[in-house]
Length: 173
Image (cartoon, rainbow, N blue to C red; front, side, top):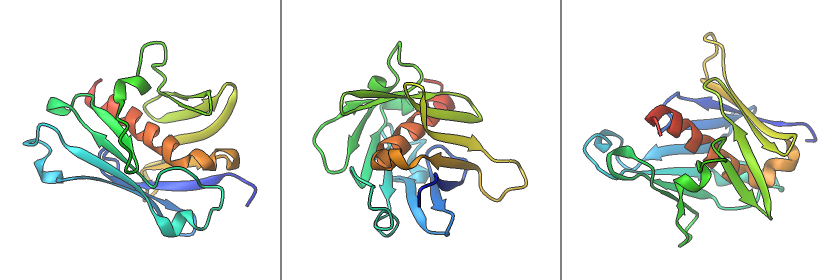
């Protein structure tokens, strides 16, 4: 497929939802370690999983299969860990001043999310790599994520930073 890849987001909770492709294959799931415990747990852990069956359909997909969001006390910013890695990346790195439009770095390049409540764009300079947009109310899915083919190698990182920016909006960071 040479055109963009489309994923539909089911669920509007920024801490728990899933992405399904146009062929109804589960692409990503996001869940809280204990959804009913979030109010009681001072440091919830949220896991984003890239589904193996989906990623095997896309040979250009690279990077980690999972990312973990470790929230700080009272759901404040914490850190992110990709895969089973030992590197803890502070959430504020992606939300840092001057980079408020939520960025991620790879291969020496800076990719930024242009933030909005109903539409977001991930940019590499002037090139749009991905867009996320809330759907109209008559749709059975909450939003659509469109990824350009040249961004598929970063799909987990793009999805992780999208979710982080949505969490920042929802939690008032």
